[in-house]
Image (tube, rainbow over all chains, first blue to last red):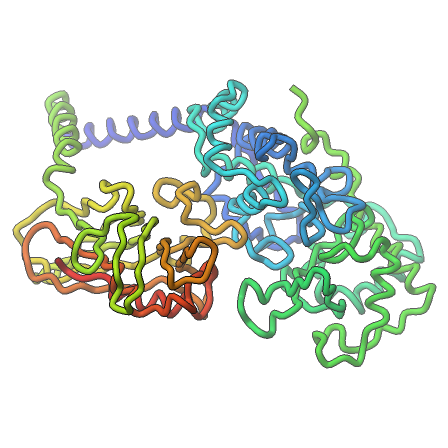
Length: 339
Length: 228
């Protein structure tokens, strides 16, 4: 009997500890759209909370993460353009320095296994280390950021709200940033509404969709519009950049000139296109793929010529524009946090 | 009775905390150059007749296991340790409660396993702030040795060996088993001279990426560890 009482007491104590340890923040739920695959991101290692998300949002928009406090994540990842750097072939960072690649769109990151055009980064949480320390981007040291954040009353408060105390660590910083970026989910484009039978495509969009399914969907797989793999897509090497892509990470011959298959969601606004931003318009992109074929060095999906007519190309581009998600691009929850 | 139980648990708990460090079995690492403690920035001559000095030595040791002659094994939870010559405390690792059992061998990994390398943002010794994480590409540096030698025709005659890589075929973590046959604390030497005795500094002086050379260096690095 006494034993039972002791166990009971222990149980209550543990419950109390659990209740109090969780009470400092508001849990946030990540909803997977109906019919979408299971996310790759391990949510068990980073429990989402409203406060963690807000801390991440503040960090995302704050140039405090750069050496001279001028560049924030949002400098190259603007919401209105699908969280990428519009109109620049190659993204520029601190002191106007120019990198070698076009910044990627940040969307539906929960379904990505690795990050960057060459997949150099293996987990969303450590992604930010790359741009933060890159001398051409934010050029800052992690220890300096920790000091700057510790000295800021605003961040001491935000860290307390998110994690229960004001201690700033790189792990908390990266988990919070990931809580913001993981929530950048786009699933309300006209395409999604068509799939959900909430609207109907025009005749041209229907034709475009059917051309897409025949010619593009094997790599730009629905509903994420990427298969999260690396492929060669027939672009000639730009000898001023000599960017060989994935091979630099894996040292495997077959990965030479392979780059990540990017998502096409919000593609209407994420121009310019390709890893080096060489194409300004979607028409140029479609023309490039239409010009390929009969080339053994290309993956089998691109081996056969597409033979698209001018009208086909127009229809295909019209379909691509149905991937624009205005609710996402204008969602106030993802915008600059006004105090 | 209930009250008494609580107090006993509390006292035992406190006792446990205090006792943990004093009565622990330690694995101690000693960073050596040719059997004597390595002194940073001191000039040494390697067996290859290179004149060298060392400015940095850091190394990850993980998953330490102690096996006893009675076939039992003591493992450490979350066993990830960064040894840094500039932080002598980092080289003394309490593993388990001390006992009078005879230790047959100690097993550990030099470096960080692949799973941990892909598991996101880490804290403690695995915090990327420790300078043992690559930024351009995800992954931990398992061992970092930097120094100078006139044999290196490089900027300021510097050499840098950043040995790492978590993806096959360039997975650079190495398992090391050391036979012990004694009771109590274990002291393991890590001898930098052994690594440098197998490197042609004129040609190999800057290894900063995973790959074949890093794999060769990782193989050599296992020979640096011996029981003292």
